[in-house]
Length: 53
Image 1 (cartoon, helix red, strand yellow):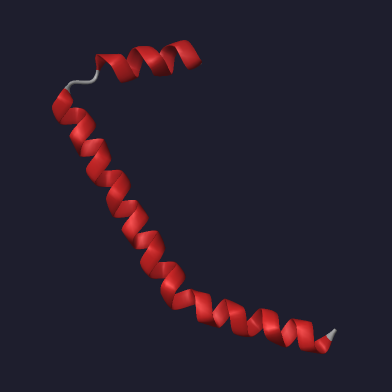
Image 2 (cartoon, helix red, strand yellow; image 1 turned 60 degrees about the horizontal axis):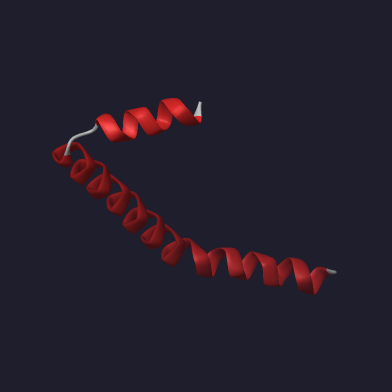
C-alpha cells in the first residue's frame, strides 16, 4: 500500500500537487470556520454536563 502511494505521489506533476495543496488548504479553512462557530456551542454543552455531574 505504501509503495503504491509513493509511486502515485511521485507520478504527479507539479500542477497536480498545487491543486492538492489548494484543496487541503480549503478543507483546513472550512474546518477552522466550523470549529470557530461550533466551538462555543460545544463548550456550553460540556459546561452544562459538567455542572450536572
